[in-house]
Image (cartoon, rainbow, N blue to C red):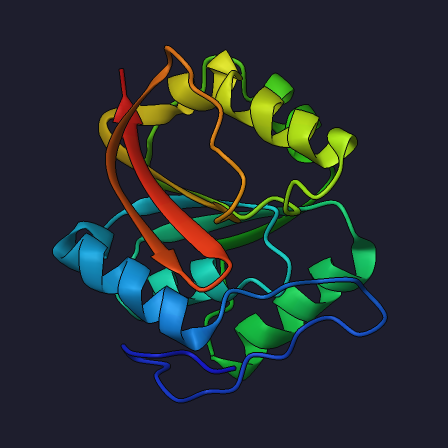
Length: 187
């Protein structure tokens, strides 16, 4: 796995060790960023369930102004920090937050200002993970922190339906093997 393009293009990204993770593949990341095009440039980005940080790091490499990485696993947070150092993308524009996505969003309150939000939650292979995806899509705090013209990019298991919600409008959807990428705007 590597940074696909931008100032850190070609730099390897290492997945966290001893952590059950499913990093977004190079092919899927390339498709996501190709779809987003120039929307990444100067964007403030939120990377939820960040894992290795590959989505946020790709955004920084392609010209995003800032990325907040949210990850609950400490080893994964350290992996994100190491990947940022390897890609020479450390600094105040790259903030790694340890904690659950639900707590982060609950604490976000009236904060706004994200142009792009990436979410790659654990795939809904059981009832608990399916409920996590459902809760994410129905979280009003998430909708509130995305700018009115922002894009929410959700990665999910292709064979499982994405729960419907009044908070989001589906703009585009594409499937790559077992992975579904859904692009949403605020409803």
